[in-house]
Length: 244
Image (cartoon, rainbow, N blue to C red; front, side, top):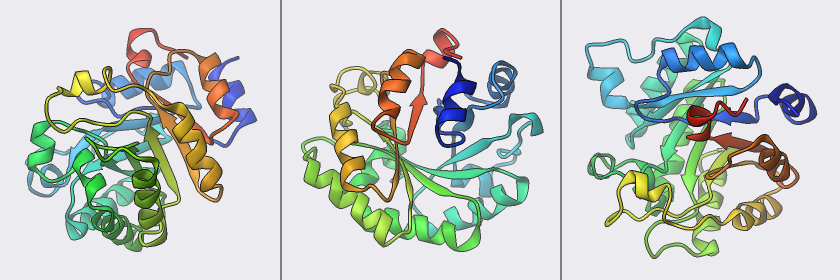
């Protein structure tokens, strides 16, 4: 089965390529678009500081990339709203908030996976962006952080961000993140995958769109996940083997 078959059978654009730092720039995304017309493509994470204060054009992309989503890194609701509005004006199809990156640099900026410990702030960020844009505002997160890895912790996070922030779409990296002691690369490999937890989340939040990320290597695996979930996001495998 091809990606076209998948997106015809399931909701549009629910097969996606993950935001990957130093990989999914506009040149990589253009190449991926040559391979498939269907897959939703994500930018690398772009910080609000870079967009607002940087000298370069951090929102540049090729029109051929559509559908394309911008992933933002930040935790200031006002700054995120400014960037989301600029992104919509530039034509992005979705705005995604990074609540999954565990790197020290990202933590020092008070964004990424550490925000799982501050669900009300994440809700405020999502609400601020939704107030100024019409395109979907989504969240990519983990199943937990450090010793805060219970299912209750995850459901509390999703409840607050969906009910208080209005977020209707979540992508769940089915590993927890260790905020200290592991590198970003190790955080993609060492914490065990827990797909059943993502499946249970969908069962308990059937009104939300829940996609899964982490460890997906083939289209057949994607189809298995789509029996339980609304979407699948593929990461490094899209770079290694061009899963399409």
